[in-house]
Amino acid sequence: MTQSLPQPTEVLIRPVQYGDMETADRLCDEVEGEELQFSINPDQPLKPLRWYAPWRFLSFLVNRSHLFGAYVFGQDNKLRGIVKISPFNRTRTTWRVDRVAVVDEAVSLDDRPVEDSAIAVDSPSLPLSDIGSHLLRYCFETVWEARTWLLEVNVNDNQLLALYRQNGFQPLAHITYWEIDSALLQSLAEREPDLPNLLPVSNADAQLLYQLDTMFMPPLVRQVFDRHLSDFKTSLIDSVLNGVKNWINQLEVVSGYIFESQRKAAIGYFQIQLCRDGSRPHQAQLTVNPSYTWLYPELMSQIARITQELPYQSLQLTSYDYQPEREEYLKQLGANRIAHTLMMSRSVWHKVRESRLSGFENLQLPEVLQGLQPSRKLPIPSRITLQSMSQSLQPSEAPPNARSKGAAKSGQPRNAILNLSSKPDFSDTPPQDPCC
Image (cartoon, rainbow, N blue to C red; front, side, top):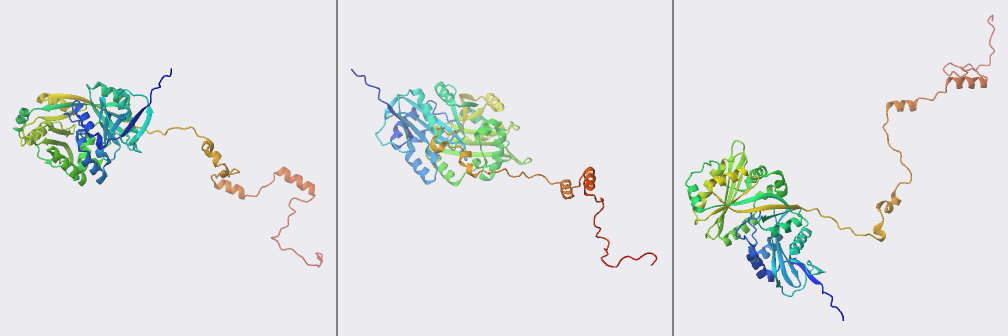
């Protein structure tokens, strides 16, 4: 009697395709808290997977490969999970994980050939708790330009929290979501805001907004976000894409900033995303200089006045744990807390996989370049001084004892040296007597 060995299962991680749209949309519908729009990805919802064809076409047309950055996890020809990622800044050094969704019941995939870019390995059946880790690791290895990864998760979602902590994510900041009802917005709109230097936002104001954003965040958050001047500018292509997206979703974006003329700096900024059809709450984003907290009532009155032009809806905005003044103001205002999330980050240090070398690859560099090494030691250049030069130019004199001994042996006087300065007499006439 022979025992049948378990057949290896095929694990496949690949980019999402058009045939996965129906299943991907169902995964997005099952995500809890989808009506809550996270603050770190206000313009990257997970739901537009159904717009696969136009987004895919635009990504090839304008060279925006991140417009549709989603990957699926398949095991035994069954869809088990999906992950969506996107760049967080313009330099693409920080990427964010928009969402990781895992299904409890596997969904069959259509039989299709495996692409060259896919990863296919034989492994035993994997539990559902490991699917998210495989998807995240695939993203870490695929996106080489990312130095930091960023995400936001609900504090009550223990399963996702454990998944992210297991893959190296650490807490960065706590975020609280507040909601102001329409009745409170009407009362705020009755007050006239005192904002004399309220100006619209354009690309010419990018430097002012960048300085405000730098002063607004603590150093660690600023390092993770890694924003630059280009992050506060909008190109023509991005303007067109945002306009099309807002037109499809029935949205309108209004923004402005407060300019302090004495210091020539921006001290406050707001951006509100208005819903025209009243199907969702309005979304507001505030940035206030910590030294000008008195701007909160003025900005809220200005935002409330803008919302009165559209159907009555509630307003949602956020506050971070490093903004105690904003949280205190919202408590006094009577805003309701609707959610509490945790922002987490992870640094990526790419390592080269080590392998055992053999043959010529095992040779060390000194051995390879041994023939190029010098055969003798070259003189080491040193400093030349005037004293050493004078000593080398002076003739060497023998000591007195040696000179006396040499003169005695030769039998000649010490000063028996020709005196060429005096004229010698070479005549043959003998010398005459003194008397002559």
